Length: 158
Image 1 (cartoon, helix red, strand yellow):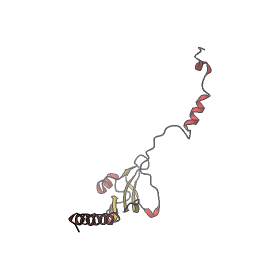
Image 2 (spheres, rainbow, N blue to C red):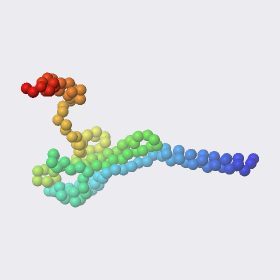
Image 3 (tube, rainbow, N blue to C red):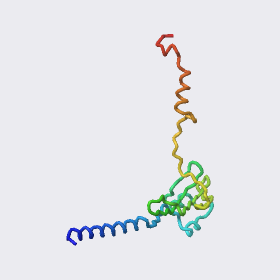
Image 4 (cartoon, rainbow, N blue to C red):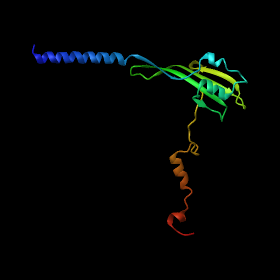
């Protein structure tokens, strides 16, 4: 066996080992955690009718969403996602803590939702209204044809 053949065999072994390590680590399960939910002991310290909105925010920190203009509720949320190789991430757990306040910003209710509850909580609606209700471009174009004045089209003064 020549020196060149030995070098190629060593290079191929090293490349094979690197590929094996890469393939093994690429298929490793990874968990990622997002958000924050206050501990149950801290939530139990809240007093309905007594604790203010400012006190809750001072105790738990800034909420992920504040819908004060609509229903005077603040939300805290945490999720766990599981990643496995090239597959799409899977959400394995979710908790949403909804803290409701009355008109005087005093605690009214504390609700906890999980992934199993399947309740959809809209935190932020980012839709710009265009003022056009289910009208396609072609419908708009054909609808404007009936409003053309033949005199204006031919350039005649009326």
